Amino acid sequence: MPVEIQPFPRTPDSNVTFGAEVRHADIEHLDEKDFEAIHDALYKHQVLLFRGQKHVSPEAQYQLTKRFDPASDTYGHGKDVPNAKNSILHPDLKTIPSVPQVQVIGHGFVKELEGLHNIQLRHPHHRTFHRDAIPAEKDLDCTRFYRWHIDAALYGRHPPKVTTLLAISVPKGRRQTLLYDDGSGDTLDVPLGTTAFVSGETMYERLSDEEKHFVNTSRIEYAPHPYIWMSECRSFPTGLGLYTEGRELSEEQLPPIDQDMIQVLPMVWKNPVTGKPALQIHPSAIRKIHKADGTVIDDLKTVRDIVYKLQRPAISPSYVYAHDWQEGDFVLFHNRGLLHSVVGAFADDEVRIFRQCNLAASVSV
Image (cartoon, rainbow, N blue to C red; front, side, top):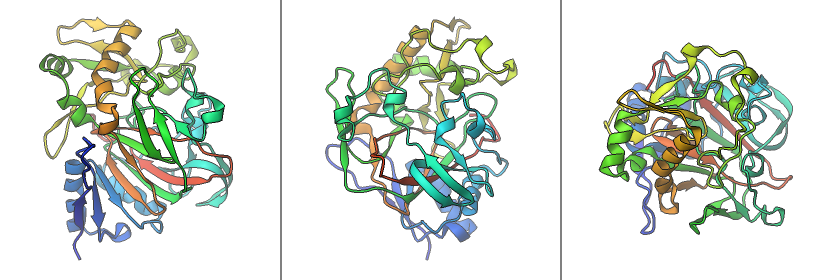
């Protein structure tokens, strides 16, 4: 039976225009015809959901991810992230020994999984990254977007084309109120531990003509070793970038910097199948804006204010797809066309186990 692509149902109060479910796909034994259908569907729908895939092996997850970029082979952040103790990513990742391109993420104690033993997973909590935290007494009822981002090292390695996530264990039974806490009054009812997605294409479409000209002709320079550089910084309550408080690490405090590895990337990335433009900026890692006339905006607060104004409208509640995870859900998403964020606050006894795979791309955007 050929694979079937079923777009997600739309609701009257939602402006989410992406996402589809894939049915009848055998990820462990995916033939070329089915992969071609999935490939084109991904770039059309941006997020693809495969239900009932708990049996999928780490190797099969890696191989499907790699088929979108056969020349890629290394985890998107490189081989050393789990050991880079001064990176903000370090506590969140456990590498599967037999397939090092696949990481285990989640929350709680896991006795044994895929060659890993007695591991303690930590779900990223907004209080470790945001300047102003939700009061402790509201912690299980309310939550925030932790950090809107693109899966990318943004230093040396090219941004991955796709990311895959597999839900192995998912705590159920609670929902939370997501608070924007930015004066807008915006809130969003979300499932516990959701992954939130927004479309870079929608983010671009919402811009004025003047803003579109600006983003089409400007480039973003990212900080060297960005996840170490930002390790002492504190986020806005929306998770969409950082306060400018002088907390960024200096070049002297960072590992040695290779100037050739610093990335200056377009603000707008093109969908390889549909040709649609997407505003794709990792707001927490930005350092400078290079304008078309050759001038550079290097005042960090100004850079952050510009990018925040461009991105904030498209993370409003009606534009957010908050996936309600079920055990066995396998999600494949277009990493170069979306931003996403971890969400949620778990109790100590709530265990969440996921596998994640993305690969540093063989070519830049």
